[in-house]
Image (cartoon, rainbow, N blue to C red; front, side, top):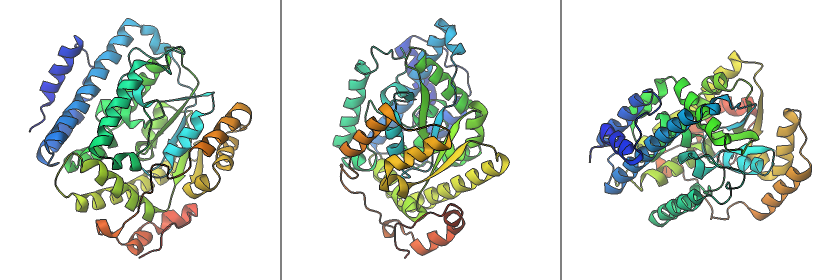
Length: 386
C-alpha cells in the first residue's frame, strides 16, 4: 500500500478543522519518508497502517500546536533555559540516566504521552492524571501484545521520560522513522538534511508544554542529538550536555537487535543485512560528529559518562554529572534517585542478549573500527572480541 502524504495531511486537517501546519519545512522529509516506506521498507499490512497512523498523529499535533500558539501568543515568550541534554546512541544508558534525572523535582522531563499529544499543555494539577496518559498506555499495551519483545528492548512508561525524537518526528527529521522501517533513501536524505528547522520545532513544542505551568530545567534525551550537536546548541546555546559512552561492539549488536525487533513487527522481510550495515555506520557517524563538534566548540558544556559506571554505581555517577555542572546531589533528589535505583533492578523485563553472529558482525573487526573511540574515552569492554 502506497503511503500518500497529501492524503494524510488532508485527513489531519479534516480531523482537527485546522489548516496551518506551522510552515512547510516538514514537507520534504514527509514526502521522502512516504516514498521510501512505500517502495523500500517492504511493509506488511500492519506496517503500512502503523506508519500512516504515526504520520497522521504527527500532523495532527503540528496543527494543534500551531493553533495553540496563535491563540496564546504569550507562549512565544517562554524561555527554555540551560536544558540538560543526555545524548548517545540507542542502548547506551540514556533512558536509565534520564529516569534518574526525572526524580529531581527541579527537572522537567519530556513525557511520552505529552510529546505526541501536546495540546492543551499539562498543568500542575493535571500532569499526573491527564486522560492522555491512559490513551498512551493503551497504545503501548497493544504494541506489547503484537510484539512482546518490544518491552524487553525499550522499557519506557507512558508517563515517564521519552526521547526527543518523538517531537523531532513532527518535522520528519528524526531517527525514529528509520527505527520504524528500513528506509535507505530516507536515511540518506536525513543524513544530509539541515536540522535547524527540526530543533526550531522542538523549541516551539517545549515552549507550549511548559506554558501550562509545569516548569523546571528541561531534562532531555535522544540518540539523535549526538549526530546534530551543532543544531542543538544553536537552538539551546546554554545546553548542558551529557554524552553516554559504551563498548561499541555491544552497542552495534544491541542496536541491531533493537531495530530488528521494532521493524520486524511491520515487515515480514529479513532486513538484517541492511540493519547491520546501516546502524553500524550510524554509530561511526555519531562518533565522528561528536568529535567534530568538540573540536569546533572546545568550551561547550559537556560531561562524559560511561555506561559501565552508571550501571555499577548510578548515584555516584549522577553525583559526578551534577558536580561537573557546579551543582550538588542531595536532599529530595538524592533520596528519590536512591529509591528509584532500589525499586528498578536491571533486567526486570528480562535479559537482552547480544548476538553478533545473528547480524553477520565480527567483534574483532568492530573493535578495530572503533579502536580510536574506545581509546579516546577509555571505554571498558563488555564482550569478548570474536
